[in-house]
Length: 483
Image (cartoon, rainbow, N blue to C red; front, top):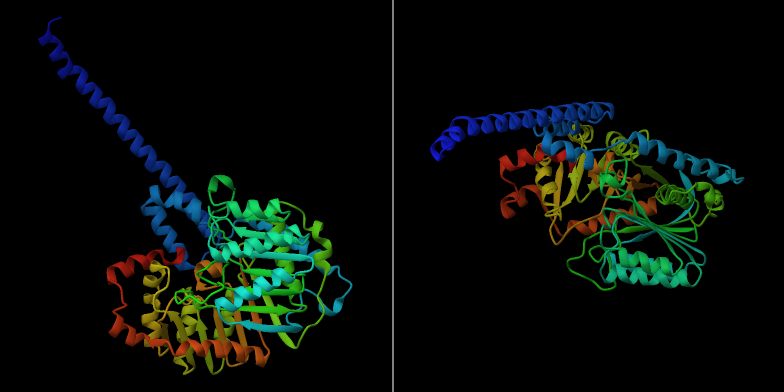
């Protein structure tokens, strides 16, 4: 067959056949991908329904999964879980076993499940320098046990100083247990973990980051900050073990934040929470820590407090429920201080309704936080709150990371949770209610110390041009429930 004949065969028969087959394969592959994506999207949407999410969270995932399944499906598998049934079952078994052991104590005077724990000592650590010095002092002074859970352990002077002290105490025979969140302390703590373990201490990582490492969602993070010394004194709040939050020397760029020292019977609940998280992460039975779980510290003061734990293993959302209750029941004044503000519909509408009744509500936020997307997302809510008459104040000098709610000089809430849907419905968090007037007065004074460096919402609009592009704001609002 000559060259011209080969050319005719190729052009007339072979090339069209290849194009036809190729086109068919592309068509089949494209449609197969679409079908698989649709099926996965349908299954995920069904799971979202079963999780009984709030409407805004549901529609955010519905939008991204249904209309962009190639992106939405893998994102959901990595970050979409909320009330993981498998996690809830496993974690709840550990937590329930820990509680059962704790309730077997003979000292019924201080039962773990009592609503309010009386006879506690309260102390406010108002800044990062004070908190750093206190946690270092407690580590150095501990006589037998140090339990620390944190979201972030920094690979910086603050983190290294704390690791050095934990290492020294472990070498001295003190029982050191350090629980780190795998995402918050991701890829920066390998050397620190090795150092503590070599000294005889123990380190556990909470929930692997990559979905292939776990059968639950990577979205479920332990955001609690708890440090317990000798099962008697505890430090809680929102400060991580990182130079941005605390340090030996003052730093003008350090986040404004505080921590709380609690000493007395309430520490038993914090110990139970830590041991439950530790046993779950370390894959061991809480029964191994029976003596710790049964121990209830002696009274140490006159403060009445309540510890609230919340997370994906809880059948309800205790912190969210408590916040809603405070908002709906306060009579005169309410102050909410939070670094990130993306409320769910119930909290949002409850604030507006109370403002319309003439109650005074003050909201204090950082002018610019360290999370740009959350700053953009908050303005959808702030516009309506401002119109409802709520006093919105922006803290200007630096990032403000404190979390505090004050109601009628009657109750205060502190802890690790932000007013956003991730903290209230996804993360493992710890909260603390304070009922003693002197404790509330100290927290009120801290809140008032922020005021001199605040500007109003409307002044910020005029002077700092804070409002984002409206199209960008609308786009970010669609995904706000996932932030």
